[in-house]
Image (cartoon, rainbow, N blue to C red; front, side):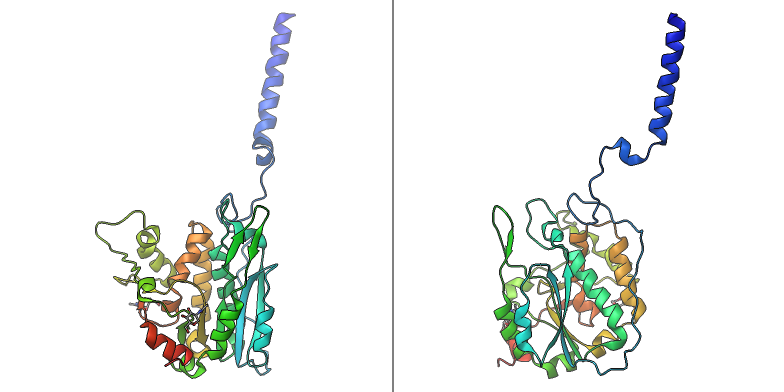
Length: 297
Ligand SMILES: *[C@@H]1O[C@H](CO)[C@@H](O)[C@H](O)[C@H]1NC(C)=O
Ligand SMILES: *[C@@H]1O[C@H](CO)[C@@H](O)[C@H](O)[C@H]1NC(C)=O
């Protein structure tokens, strides 16, 4: 009797183990959390499904002369852009509000998603570009209440800036950051070859590899600097100085890198000016910038 019970117990035990091994992974780990790439808790980007953006064919219609591409959150108020119509047309790209809280307790928008949407927009519209495009990220001026994040608008400021934008300058120079940085704001030099390396400057430490991954060459500059942020204007001619394939390569890097989305997006904030043909250190003097970019001379 005892022996039989022992055999039965052993068989049952083996069966349970077999079931356990063959079970889908989610059974073992309990209910799997919704795995949203880049969302808190951080989930490594999954290469599948792999849906790279592709370029739309030339529409044949006349393209807007000036366009604002605004990446925004669902409940952001972007109505202010309409008051710039008809001089400026707009295209709104709405991103999921969850990414405004990438980090627990944080209230920033995931930068990788912003960079991704800029790149997707460029790739899709590469053959239908307006003469001048202004890229704007979600409004970063936030207040956190106990319940939610309130997005306060800095639109009035931007509206004035955009209506003062010196289009002739954008057309001749190709690219301008909408921020005219005070010298201190542009002083944060990224030194990819700092010796000894400062491990706390993660972006800097990662830069040589990142540069190679993005641009595919190893001539990493000794110094990189620009005004922080992702608000800039660029001309069609400048965008098209790079091929569609290059933008696709940038997008692919962003989606394949094991870096968290926020840092990967930050990489682009430090490289847009290089992507659009400016020197690695791009810090025009404040007065000169206000004169050239906004006509305040
Ligand atoms: C608006 O323009 C001023 C210069 O006239 C500049 O200092 C400021 O950073 C700009 N603001 C934005 C949001 O681009
Ligand atoms: C490497 O890529 C950067 C960015 O596109 C470019 O500015 C630089 O000229 C390239 N260097 C070489 C040697 O191709």
